[in-house]
Length: 195
Image (cartoon, rainbow, N blue to C red):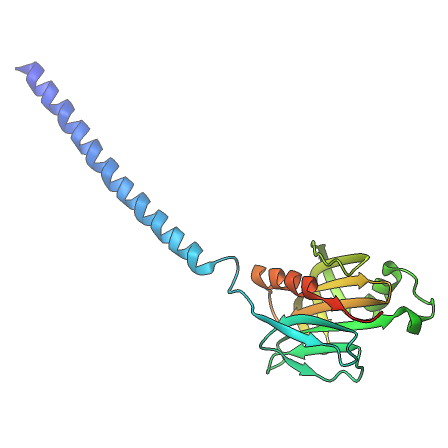
């Protein structure tokens, strides 16, 4: 009889443990489902940014930037600038032909130094960009202050046989991973038509 009672108590304990394991497994499954939904809703840092073509006024190049941005006149047909309606984010491309520079800047490092003396950039972190048009290029994420717009952005410096270029985007506030990926697409979209 004692053996039966001991066996009964052992089975009862096992059943209680089994019930707790099943309840714990349900909790784990619910938490896992919630986490998966949260990750799916967040994506990779935001929604994908649709791009459209922005040609330079002089026709020497074109680039794709955020389709919601509106072109602004920079007073130079070889520069392209576009910002959203409220001016809280935007992008610019500035071209400096080697003919115009007349040898005063001979390499990308010298060009980069000139640009960084005009625009405040902090906390530069190198990123990989790719464009076959550039014989030499560098790109960074950074803190930036451009034309009274302060925040985070990306900047790329590129050199072709014809000119030096700076491509930048800036957003008042913190940029998302999706915006950094969009910048890489912007750089990749650059095409030079001048010879």
